[in-house]
Image 1 (cartoon, rainbow, N blue to C red):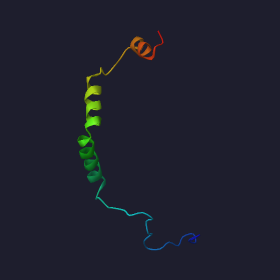
Image 2: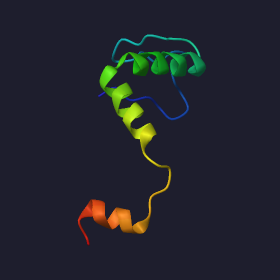
Image 3: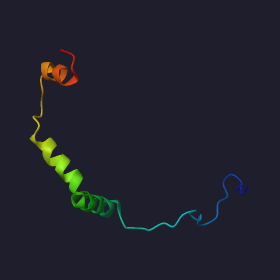
Length: 68
């Protein structure tokens, strides 16, 4: 096991797996949005969910869950 004394670290720790730096977090978010939009199943689900009302009644929740 390779251990380092407390407070002493090498200038650069090697990552165990290949790492691709894609830039800033904003770039990662833009890439994530782009990939999501390419996913036809996800986009169909989001379109269907967009048709649902924003608020549903307690009565409807009970009906959906088969409680009444």
